[in-house]
Length: 352
Ligand SMILES: *[C@@H]1O[C@H](CO)[C@@H](O)[C@H](O)[C@H]1NC(C)=O
Ligand SMILES: *[C@@H]1O[C@H](CO)[C@@H](O)[C@H](O)[C@H]1NC(C)=O
Ligand SMILES: *[C@@H]1O[C@H](CO)[C@@H](O)[C@H](O)[C@H]1NC(C)=O
Image (tube, rainbow, N blue to C red; front, side, top):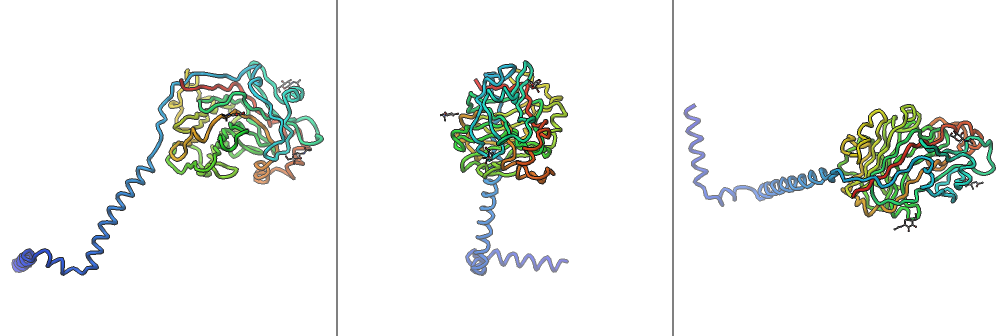
């Protein structure tokens, strides 16, 4: 014991007495390089890690805005706030979009004091040409706002491709597209909320949403950067629960969508409504890597029911729908009886 202690002491003394340059000279230059590189690497890792941590945590300030009700779509006059789109379907669906007069004559759009219905022709057997349907576009255009869509019934059934969305169809995709509700065929996979933009809008950033992100590049063709909700967010399940309210907020900080179940809508009677009381959004598109005001402008509210087309055709067999879509929708009008929208009101709020 004692002996060992003495030996250590003398060794320490010896090395302390050597000049610093001498001990450095004893290191091989390789070791010096390795040590330097090690220190440098550590510093770089710390800096990059910090930057990445800060970047990964970037998130906009969604502080509540002072909203004021600016427009309400309701009652007998519901459809007066829309144009009827009558051009050939831009998405190659097996539909004929009819004008207002024809839609009323065929009872495809129908409004009462309490609700508005929009549907496809589910009566005519084997129509000459494509089956009649409706696509309406709001006369008002919006750059931003808080929108509450009170929905009683969502359309579903083999061959259907319904949507409630916003876009500027005359400046597409420059002015962006927001698909608040979109489904196809039986609509039993839940609703998909999506935004479409020109190049440069990315969503691989921090988000606060309960839906499942499908793509993070909003410029990706067809899907945009979609987010899928659970099975209760669309179709027979949603209708069975008496519908619900879809809320959409478009603002500089981002675009968010909520699905609010009818039995949990207590906070909606607040005036103005306060999104911070609705919990986590179904879909969140923050402005972190996407300058929302420059990608989304001049948006009309659009409601339509397409038949077949790219989306219903793509999910046709997965939904166990029989035969070919165009034949099916031509020959089976009674299978299209659930293919209708029913709305209570649309309310639009803007920040003052
Ligand atoms: C029906 O729709 C399809 C797809 O959009 C189109 O190619 C076809 O020309 C239409 N048929 C008629 C008779 O208009
Ligand atoms: C039109 O549709 C509504 C709603 O389904 C229905 O109540 C009404 O009787 C229909 N009108 C006619 C003329 O068929
Ligand atoms: C907004 O859209 C309408 C067509 O819906 C178009 O006529 C108008 O020029 C657009 N305005 C802007 C500023 O892009």
